[in-house]
Image (cartoon, rainbow, N blue to C red; front, side, top):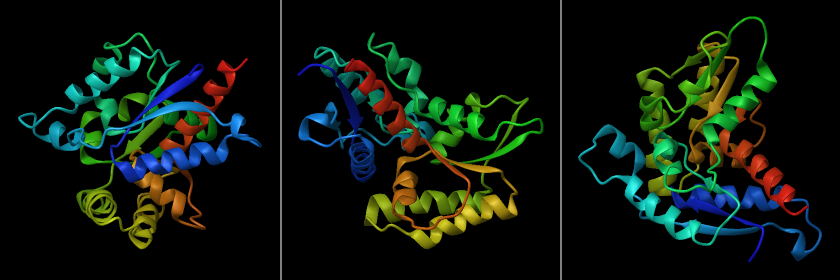
Length: 237
């Protein structure tokens, strides 16, 4: 197969499924041959990224992802798509494994926020993500202090975010729309944020299935989908 990219997924599987579903639905296609060429690696047994960030004595996800990158690089894809926000904590280490570019989801999302919301006064950006992503600063580093103020949920709301991601979506396959909307409402109305960045692909899944959620949201996975399509279509010409 020529002119293809590789999706490194399985972190988790339902979120990866959401990415692929949105990718295919947004691809301008009228025949089978119009769709994009890609390899999907659903590596479900990659150790939990947040667990490792919080306790480095646990198994490292970098080992598994390094193996994937080496295997897939031998096939020479045009680029890699890493469909896990928390895994971007290890982005530099992973990119060093291969000369093939890995798209940087937090950076792509931050660029969209800057494009949509930049103004003279500071923009309050709420970050909803796993505790691992919050602790790692993977998103905070992408926003300049001069233009943006990154607002992290208080402990109670962060607990709700973690419960939504792990207890509801990952463990029970329960898309808890009521809790999701409650979290958004808190960050926009109580915390007076201008925009909410969804920095976890389970939250992207929630955004996909929640109808009429009238909040200013930048969904990192959605922006990654658009960048993936843009680059893949450019490779066809």
